[in-house]
Length: 72
Image (tube, rainbow, N blue to C red; front, side, top):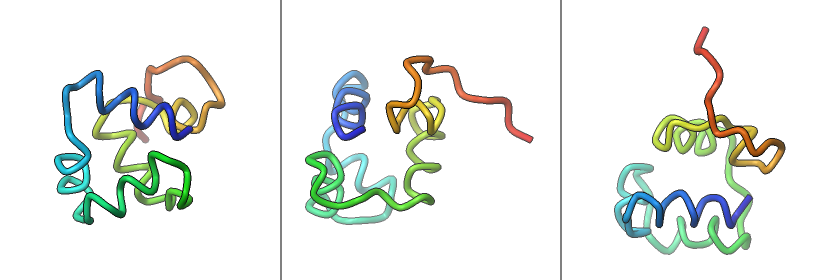
């Protein structure tokens, strides 16, 4: 999962600081997610899936399909 977070961020030419600002957290805190030192809370996973327009399953490496599910 952690590689996906980094790949998605880099594909959008974003810095960790920019993503952390979106999540309302520190760059250091966000970097801990990317290196796998800290688990990503569910609410952060949801925010990241919306931010990158991918499914949570994709973030979690459950699927390689990036297309998000239709929102209820």
